[in-house]
Amino acid sequence: MDKFDRIFHLHAILSSRRTAIPLEDLMARLECSKSTLHRTINALKDYLHAPVVFDANAGGYKYAKDAFGETYELPGLWFTPRELQALAIMQRLLKDAGGGLLEEHLAPLARRLNELMRHQRLNLGEAASRLRFPSIGARRAGKAFDVVASATLQRRKLWIEYHARSTDERSERTISPQRITHYRETWYLDAWDEERNALRIFSIDRIVRATVLDAPAFDVPEAELDDHYASAYGIFGGKADKVAVLRFTRERARWVADENWHPQQESTWLPDGRYELRIPYREPRELVMDIMRHGRHVEVVAPDDLRQQVHEELRQAISQYSK
Image 1 (cartoon, rainbow, N blue to C red):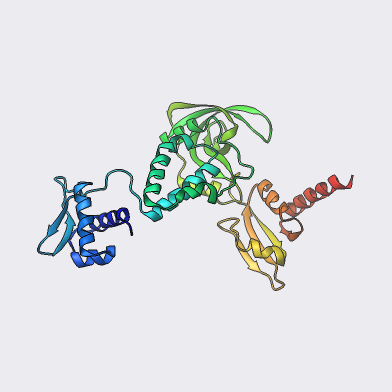
Image 2 (tube, rainbow, N blue to C red):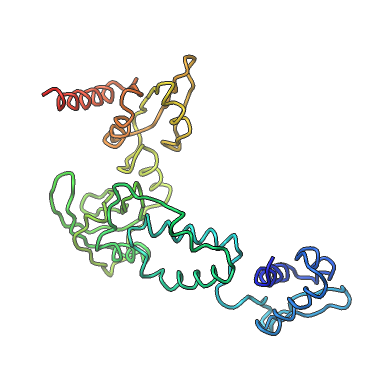
């Protein structure tokens, strides 16, 4: 434990207690000698102006309360080595997966973290080359992201011009934003659509223009949001009204058995080593795409309309190669 760690650890011990801690206990917890402990205490008092006092009755040290009864806190941005390590990973994750969304805003924090990392001699500068979080098929957050995020957090209605991918149509909407979701490398907005009087989901990168309105947003209860967006498979939402029954081959089962497709999924190992997965869903588009990526290693057992849809997709895929 170096000097920096010892000062931080001492502060953590003193700030977590109301009573004095004996000198011997401090030496044991900091793994240091009596002279080193006194140097650490003096550094905390002299350089960081911490109100460390000696309690003669208890034979130990504690923090004195200020005039308002508040406990002393270290100035500036302080982290333990483990916390710095986690922040270095998060910083790299935001750079790779965030699509540049927060780079400008996080730059000052990143500079301070880099200073702390150098001081700690943790060699966390290696994070840039040793950690990778590749984003496959990621979409940019879109130019309207800041406006959408502001309205969502401030609980204000939004006017948007939206360009739908599925229909290639443009529309103007007045919506009450509810949640922002990052799902499969894309940013989505869950919102109450006033014209349709229903919950809808919008891909934020397809919002062409957005304006925050003065009117307060209509708040949908959180339980209702969860019921609408989380009960069925995928991002498209809606209350689940069907259950897909999928059977995976023994080879593929070793992977799929460790995957979580849906919070309410049910699974069974079959006697022949195959793996059966039951998934609640409503809108089949995303589910069909995920089934297709397993190719010959999965069979749709039920329901019949989902089985026929996957069969037709496979038939058309084969036709591309039979010409």
